[in-house]
Image (cartoon, rainbow, N blue to C red; front, side, top):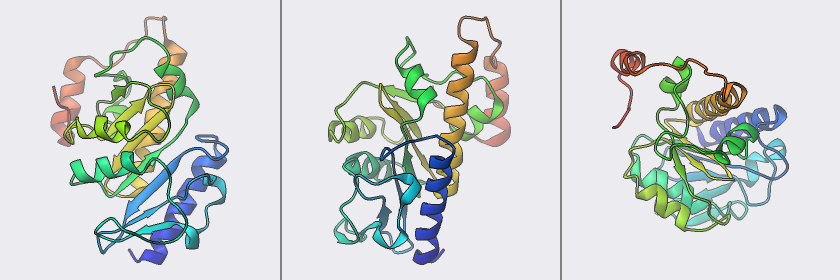
Length: 214
C-alpha cells in the first residue's frame, strides 16, 4: 500500500471508531508501519474523528521524527509492540467504555478477557491486564516489552486497551472485538453465563493456528 493510501486508511478507520463511540474527545492513538520501515502515528491531542492525513507524525526506519505534527505521548507503548512482535504492522489504543469498566472490577491479570465467543479467541487471543500507569509513562512500554511479544493485546487498568495487528484493518477489527467481548462480560457478569470451555478453545486454536500461550 502506498503511503498516501495508508494515511487515508488510518484516518478513515479512526473516524469509524470515533463515530461509533469506541473512543471519544481527543482520546486514543493509532500507528502503522510504512513500506520503508517507518511509522505513521496520530498526533498528540487530536481526535480520532478529525485526523488529517497530511498531519500524521512520520518516523523514518531509524525511529527519527521526520515530518508531520508531534506524535502521541504514548509512543513508548507503540514502539514496544513493534520491537517485540515481528508481525506487528499497526497498533491501536482506545479509551473504550466497556473494557475500561471491566478493568475496574476483579479480574485475572493473565486472562483479562474471558473466552466467551469464538471471535474473541480468534481475533484477540489472551489479553494481559497491566496495572495503572500515568498517561505517557514510559513504564507502560517497558511492561509490554516484559511480555516478550507473547501477547498481541493488553489492557491498561483504568485506561484502555491496546492491540497490535498485522495491518491497520486487522488491529482495528481486533480492538473492536475486545470491546465487544468486554461488553458481553459486563452484561452477563454474575449471571452464570456459559463461556467457551477449554476443549472448545483448544479446538479453535488448533483449527485456526492461533497464538494461545500458557
